[in-house]
Length: 68
Image (cartoon, rainbow, N blue to C red; front, side, top):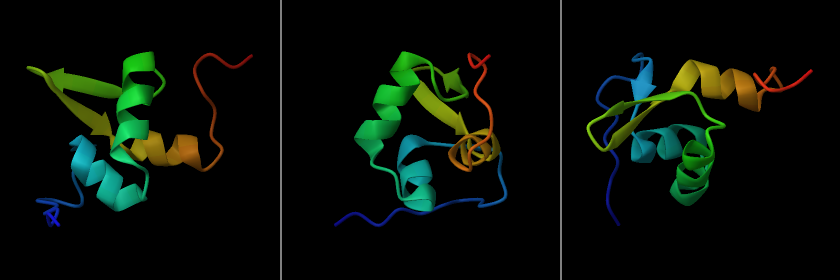
């Protein structure tokens, strides 16, 4: 099994494997949500970088941009 190395746990943006390791969410779930536009992120080339504080706030029951 591959070990995930989180280079800087205090960083705002993390890769999909790092985010999956930190949150316990499946990488496939994260990929699907990213493609659907439901997780805040930036792209670095073809690599998704997930805004971890925004994702954690969303998971804790925070608001989503499309809610009214």
